Length: 369
Image (tube, rainbow, N blue to C red; front, side, top):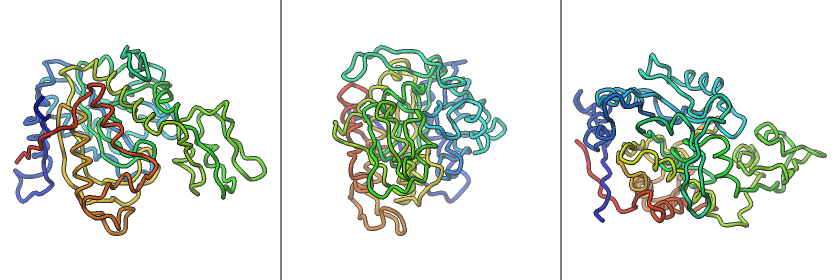
């Protein structure tokens, strides 16, 4: 099988015709993403609207450029994401829409309406049969399922549970209903380590009311815990830890299966754009953003979600770590996310995704001028 093509633009501009937005339009067309769209297709432009307080999420002006290209191809685009499992600012459609607009994704800015894909409370989904190792069926958000086409805009960054997030995570976690997210997280179990001061942050973030503070220390009711992983992510003191006694690869493999299920509904109708910019060590679900760990490296596009994520990861690892960041002492060639999140191998999701037929890791990088 020939290598998948991953198209790429650098971030240099010296004249109007080389502005990043014009180059992004050329990237969209040369990568063949317009070919995924037929006249009058309803096209889901899947992205992450960013948690309130986060500053590293995708800039709305890039979404506007892609929306314009979808319209030129004859499609009818809408911006979309799904409700979160954790109890933040995006766990229901009303709060989610307010957060999206506050972060700049209003119709007046991007030229497309916003539809929260899994409905008001995150319960609108369609089951897709996949018959793979972890799941027989997966829960895909209904608006994404029913859309004729999909363009996934992914901000590539680190993640404490999956190593990193790119196209696969965007369409898997981001394309699933709240119940689907719980299915993917169900292999994760946290524990309270030494040093807990009972601040209660984990209590506020727990969607299952499984955590209480007793005698100044957090306690987890394992019968109620759904394994969403939000308590270690949001613990300000770093004392909540994931128990990796089970297979470390479970969350990433389950995530790849959800991505596979979504792609079964979009064969020949899906394109991917990865923004390898503002590469922060944590997810855009955080209500803050740390300093980027590598320089801004470019924007990639492909119809293969595995190849584009592999290329993104390779570019990040080939780059030097930035001073005053979590990767400050990491040289070119170092496995950045593996060293920042040592409990997680970020390539598990890529290997398993290739194994189940989601795409291939072998790619050819083609620069678009």
